[in-house]
Image (cartoon, rainbow, N blue to C red; front, side, top):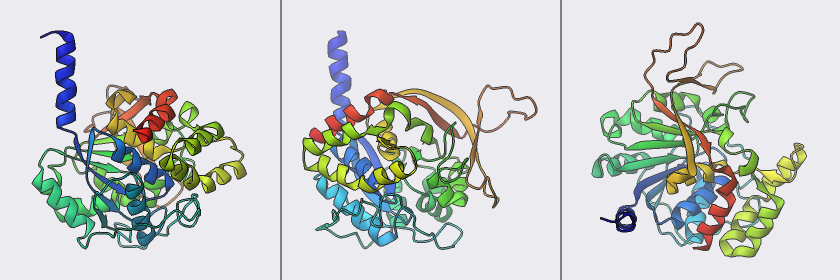
Length: 331
């Protein structure tokens, strides 16, 4: 077989068998952009979107997810999940994306409704239906995932992989100097996920800075693109104000769509690092920090004989991120 025919065969096979994905989110503007990216990708089959409290409360998260999928022309079902932390305590919603998580720009008017089935039931039934095929893309706190593991750990072992937008990676945090927002939102749940034995690929905050940040010029281009671009741009209006007030005017992070692009575009990833990930759940200054012990690295004191439960994304093509996103929403 010639190289061109082989490449065409591989391409056709990919088109015929897209990734079967469940997207789990606490839907703020960044989650919504990731949902849209997935909906516009030919490599993704969204089996369903599960939602939870985090950036916003459960009802608002649901409405935001429904709207984002509708804007993208996607009819994937939406299921309500956790309104409390894994340990049973109430999660206080907090958002830098506005009170509705979507820029307070009057964007959220879905025509559809969430399904009656609970998100955890949906996750378990879907994983059991497609053993070894389902990828969970976790864009918010890991509460729904941890509850599914607790309820039926054997079924959850049939998950192909969990993609997590979480942790600070190998850089600083945003919820605290060492902890990232999603992990900090429910560190106990994140620990359950890491310790479950399910393959986990982590995209941390350090993949979202520098050349991956969206500039004022990028948002202007989004607004000129189409209705999807204008929707995404408007949804980021409040976080752009937040960045400006925090001394970082001119560019913002959009981490959830970075994580989603690692799923939709495997060649977007430049480097991965096998690690042991350990989540700190002790209440104190380091709560929510995830410590990564790199496979093959010799530490001075700590014996590096862990199970390597995490694939940490160590580098992505940050300079291509916005252009790839723009191309996707134009498709």
